[in-house]
Length: 427
Image 1: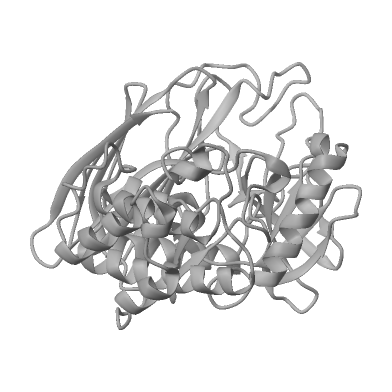
Image 2: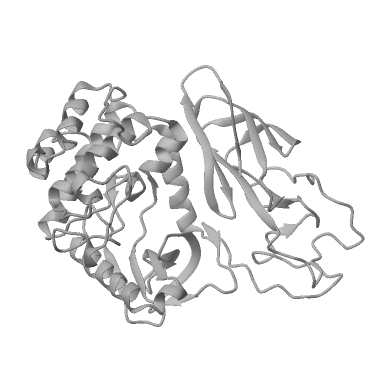
């Protein structure tokens, strides 16, 4: 989650908006709470789309479909106002990790978790189709792994009829059925194809290509996926047959690093970040961020911020000398030229050692209890980072975010010897 910015809404109907979760193609997703304190994910249509009648109609249809489908296998609708100046839709907040995130973090998943995933998503599709809806965009990013099993989300292109809404070509390349990719009528069998492609991604880390399923090692999964990916929709199994095929698979059972990240997001919901106040444009006077919790350690191309949960007060990285007091922001400062790079480490393990290298500048810590957080201000230009770490017995996960949006990470577990490894990237 990210702190609310000065221009973000603070309410939607009777819901309070408390933090940013992320942004999609049509709107921004916020974290909020109902009047009774129930956590919610609030999708607010982007201002430019709110002025377009076609997008407003699509948003209204998404709210209707989500309300019709909501239940155990999808997000329940708490409230919505498609007719507002900025249309919004509030659904229950699900502490979770998307399948795409899980695979990006850990690589291909073991057969056991994939079977549990298949069982849950098959039941979710049975619920969706039972409501007379075709999802049309089943893919790893729209499958959430929660503590009590998978959920299917995002009904932005779903339809009550068996074809793309308004005759448009809906879906995501790599996960669309052949009939969907060609712009033809797409019914429940199209979702079955996408279901199979999503299982291939879970098993291999990539969408199916050229019909090869060599990366799907489990024989039962390979047979089920091959049936789902048949070119002719009439030859594919029905969702009812898929539910039966995966019946009895245990719910959840995600890898330890995934479970740790789900727990972290539940903790975030219990204590969302404090909104960033409007900065006061005064020279020689520090500007406090996040209610005084975050404060700039230095002004320059890259400086480290002190953040709650950090076990040490970090030293500046590549900071430039300045005559201004630390944290002072001059009126002429270009505040869009810098970004925030965050490393968040959590889990049941103990951090034996961690070296963070950002654009060649290193920060090292040893023997720390989790969670541990380090935040670095970086320039707008591409920035390289590297983590060299060692963890003791237990589980651990590392989330790497830029301006609140996750851009990478790592994770694992150990029951014996320490885990020593590294991760790196460019943001």
